[in-house]
Image (cartoon, rainbow, N blue to C red; front, side, top):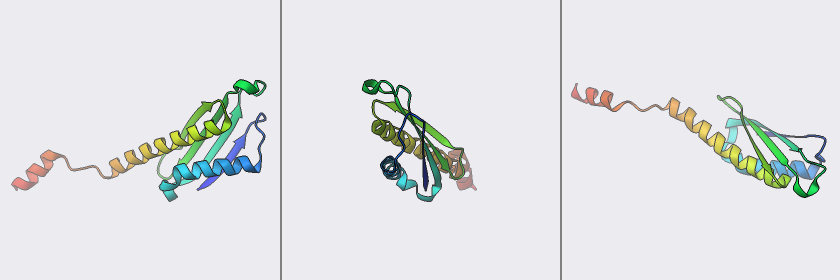
Length: 120
């Protein structure tokens, strides 16, 4: 899984930020293995001038095999909280999407059809 981190001009982009994002995203999504090819992370701070009450935003978009891209976002007081919140939301969204895909592929035989087959 490839993880790409993008920041706007209000966020200082450095190696330790990349490492933190990689660690959080990998921990949240590692169980999906090869089903996710890429995750794009977009970080921004809407109120960069107001350091006491920043509006940090983390948007994550996952590319899942056989499915449309899945995007989630989270706003929080700190950048680390926004990253953790978005990673948790993305994990739940991917789990839900893959569950729907598996349900479509493994549709159970209706009960009425099973009863007719037994009568024959």
